[in-house]
Length: 311
Length: 296
Image 1: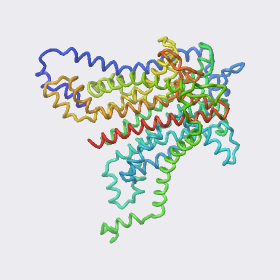
Image 2 (image 1 turned 180 degrees about the vertical axis):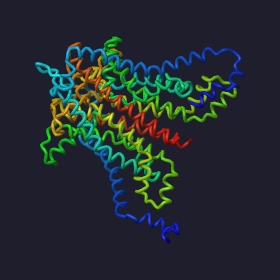
Image 3 (image 1 turned 135 degrees about the horizontal axis):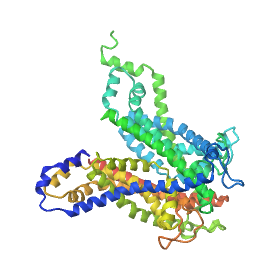
Image 4 (image 1 turned 45 degrees about the vertical axis):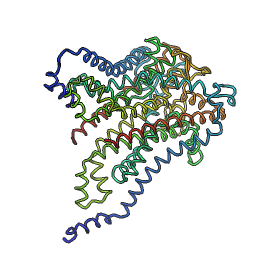
């Protein structure tokens, strides 16, 4: 930004200006307007969530919502305990993290510290292609490849729709995100640190793990948080592979319903506008929005601190 | 000690100090990449293997059918996706590029509102896509009264990919050397003339890469459209922007949820079309970027 403020203050521009250029201010106004669309989006999201959520809590006791152990807005009488959704969302996110973080970080170390320029040039775009596969396709993959594999080859009683399969595939989905953000953080570590480590007799592994990795840690953590946020809000994989019957269980071999997958299922069914069930969709949406917002904010904070260290 | 006197000895020590652990670590690194890329290959292979048998002209010539899977196709979904991509391109690309120009060329970062805009875009980029469906349902369809047509769907997708367009366009604009701007301004061009005639042409390859990636994201996205009710049975092509619509990922989801195996084969065949389209677009974007990066 230093550049544009310098241009604005350049005395040469003022000297050369012969007449007022109204067009220039119009252009600036149009550009600002375009930038404000993003603000309007956030305002719109909050507005669309807020009023049905408030109405929802006028009809449903907040204590029941937070502590209730059964979720079934369609039941008679309806049950609005959000804990089953919370536990399922956390379990599936955890499975995804367990799959993606080790694989993603090792892949990042390989790309940043070991791989030749030629390998990097082929592998990085290929990982980006993996990141570009639509999640509905990955959901179908979970349902038709991963679940049958788990049922066949593990000794557990795996149900046809289950949280484990969805969690594993959500993990596969976020591997490229973890790998590319961690690789960015590690590539940004100044080369002098590596040379210092080698000069002291460190091997490549020791340099990677004890010098480069800790130096990039804040950037890596920020990337992992962003990946967690992505896993937390993933819809299609879970909706296809994890089922539609919410129950309070941490056992991923059973059906699981997360915040996002509940929203998709409820909204695609026929629900009367203005009913409590309709408002419940927005209440769950608020929960999802607030959680991912906090995670994103945390990640941005950590990234900013990380940048200050190396610039 | 003589150990550290010659660099040669030191290097050998570093190499042989813990040979087994070093080797195991290297193997683990390579294995992680092989596993990650193996998943990619497995996804592609399993979809093609399942879908290829049903991959024929019925897929794009016929309309979806609930009762007769052998006659069903995805024509309404394919045309729906085309409408969505076209409208999204018209809405999201200009807005995103203009916003990026503002943030890179005009915004004064010391102003609080510009920092808010920037942080806000970062946050929007990481918000779950289904939230955009809720936005479209609550605000665009109901409050603005645009209904549940293809325009509402395209607006949801536009807002969803807007951060991608803005972030990519900003990077491309930032990569244009300041000397080009200074030269243009020194010759008496106004700020906008400089941006329009010098900066934008130089940034076009980067902007185009971002635009293709953003549109390919819009093509594959199903969650916000499902919230809008696009998953219901739509056996006709949209003829106006207010018509109800289907889209390829939504049609695929619809077929996956059916219990008959014929519909799963149909889903796999439609996935082959979707993946072929996306792989083509992504490779084009990546090739474009690689060529452009080499020149600088």
